[in-house]
Length: 247
Ligand code: SF4
Image (tube, rainbow, N blue to C red; front, side):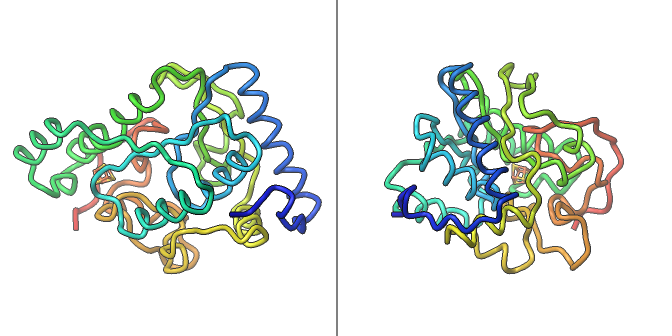
């Protein structure tokens, strides 16, 4: 397990300043809101935030949603993180009855049938467990970055999240993808092997695929849909009802 002092501080000065600003925001959130929770996606940004939090602001809890459809690589990564930091990521699960009803009505892969079915699956497997996971906290932390999408480019470091009715803290907003990977390499953090196979953004296995060079980094998420709809509901946006052909 690495130690804070053991981290080789070879981040370039600009990135070191961003890391310091991220930590300052996390500490500010704890001071302002008391109990704070980080909802980890277990993606590359999550490796940075997990390290920042567990090494420097350990009072922040880390939770994640096991949707039941995650890639095996994600679950293996989760277990490696827990061993490395000797901490537990609190997992939340979908309501079994809701999953059962959904599958009986729409089929095991019913999310391919249309936008409504896909959003309903995300609601059952992600959003509802997420609401339970952050309930009782004063604020929650997310790893979104401005450059990830047009919608996220306008995000604020502290914003009211209507879904959870809690302040949403975004410490990595100004980080670039290169910043994230520089931090991961310098600190020799674990990360999903899927990132090395063309998956910049990783979600559930049946709804995520590798992208081609030059494609938008979220192009592999719900790739059969109109790009405007490609959010899971945790970071909602205005949806259009047009979809592309399902696979
Ligand atoms: S990403 Fe796909 S499998 Fe996962 S909850 Fe959403 S629709 Fe369901």
